[in-house]
Length: 438
Image (cartoon, rainbow, N blue to C red; front, side, top):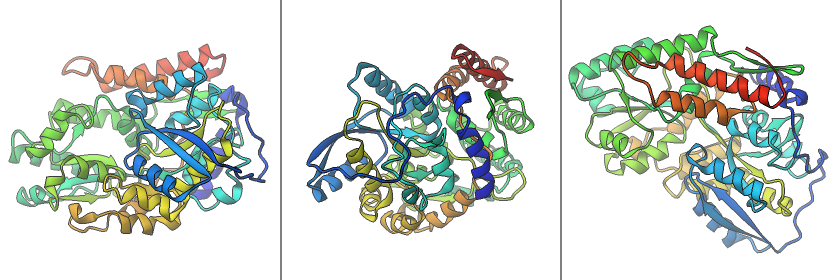
């Protein structure tokens, strides 16, 4: 699987003409990393759980580099707009959190520096290949991968037992379980469709084998009408039409309230969701458990929902120091432990050697002591290798999100939203002067 992923994404990543870009060509590609002479101060913007704890731990243990941290909204909730505006204004921080899906767009706009001279091949070799490939574009390294985000299904094991519902291993079984939940409690649902979060839907499409973005030579091929996408779209439209899932904004007061009053008894998320769920309903310790995400054929398969990397902005004069801090966060026992020991993060490190550290640091008592990291390990290994992100994810996701917000019985559909995302993507790529098919 790793080799397949590597071949596929390197073809895509190497298509510099199709990306049209890589205008932020800071730094060369040699592996002779120079370390900061210090003392220096760098600025870091992020939103991931435990970030402040990590910064505090780094500052306490380092004299040559100090980090000033500013918490910003999550990327699609305004964080990316804030970063983009700061870059345009020339007052961006040195280091920023960027999810894998958004990285190509920041690279294509010239917002980032190539960090290949600091984050070397030897550094990258110990990380999950999938995460490394998602941060490699045009043969250059643009960010330090922090984690992977394989999908998982979180469920109320007490209520599943009470209603005599088996944890579904397939999507067909998931629908049957959804019907059982509704029958057992007319107000309860097995999960929630998040209209504000296209990433959750895209992870499911990814899992099913879709490949929306493909670069060949100098052309971007966009395909959102493939069998996998059509299957997932029809499936979720069926669940909504039959009123088998709730429709609430992700992590909203309504969603959290439905967890607390037992009317939402499942959550289709990712590895990082274990910490988020625990943080939202800490009083429910012992009632929740984690299972592999359902699949179409019962065999292990996952997409990636989110996933964080750390990138250096184009005008930073402290690239070496910024990469040193990013690597400390991502590839050291101290960095991972300080984030997860805060109790709010269940990150699944891209560095395989640090997963035992994460497992030990995460208090799994909320999940009855379940070994959730072994489950994440298997899910990570099953991530579908045939997916890459295009350079217009912001445009794509904004169009889908806007259309998702209009979903209604007998009105706009999920298929309409996917088409809106497709059309907006083609328009934006064409506007940038790229050749497009699809």
